[in-house]
Image: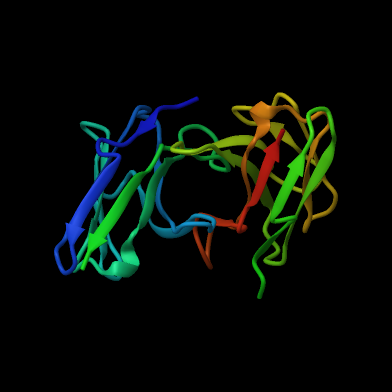
Length: 112
Length: 114
């Protein structure tokens, strides 16, 4: 399968700080990327997506940045809250627009 | 609106037993998926169905079979369970354009094979 990896398996941040979660993808043909959040005992939940014709996309408190030159994605969470504690996955869509490959995830711990 | 519903939520099987994991979505999505998630790992695609009447293998299809019963339902069957199939199984569906992007996941089935 395709390689979608994360640089940091665990990230601890103080409540109120900004968080940055990174992801490297391997296939330069990938044209669609998604970030998911998975809370303990639950299924992954869509956070934000970005297509390869964009460098940046903003949502509510979240921003995704895409650097196609180095095949890198990042998820920025502003003013991190305890409810943001979860595992975050990036996923890429390399060949078939109906199928995604997931990275192993980064666990975000938010300290009060 | 229930989204994606999976049953059962928990299951313990003995090696060699068979079972079927059920999945249903009420969002009129065309595509449906089965993933497995092992501890500390990401999601790996087992099988998927791009539309009613079609199914395709994913990354780890061995030991599994699927049935797209109709547009709403996509089941995953383990014919002869093995300890290596101990995992959390997620069903997902997808509608691409217009309303929402990305998968909608069910809450998962935690399967233990002893």
